[in-house]
Length: 174
Image (cartoon, rainbow, N blue to C red; front, side, top):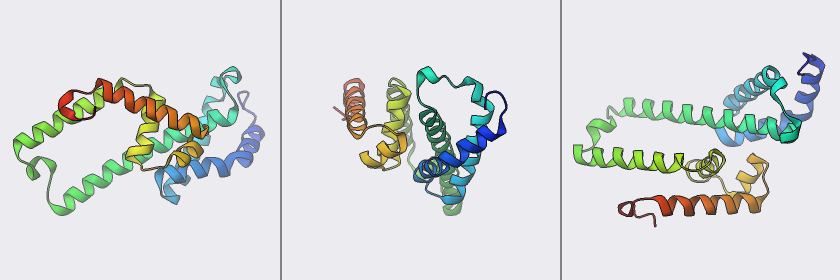
């Protein structure tokens, strides 16, 4: 593919489509959106084929990592858009729905959480997001990320411990 061989892309597509689609649909939760993610993934892989480094891992791992990242981006984008639609439909916005002091506390807590999450590795942050924001089980996360189940469990546990140690006492995470 790095040399522009379209047959290589076709072969990769045929061999991996079901796994790539499975990862995408599990993350985004919508078949049509998952199809869009898959199309973007294979286009991205075609365009970045020369960047693949066999020494860093297997092609399927690289492909599924691209898929996971793209699907998480789409999920976040869709979730954000859905929240805006729901707020518009109810006529309420976060700014008018809460008292100013509660809003300030909420914003400050959000900044703290973002800072804490930024302090851990990208992979650990994604595992935390899949577990707590997407609600996936450890087994589902292992399937999506192509990681061993024990690795998923230990990395999430370690990341949570790290977050708990770094969190201010008033957050009550300790």
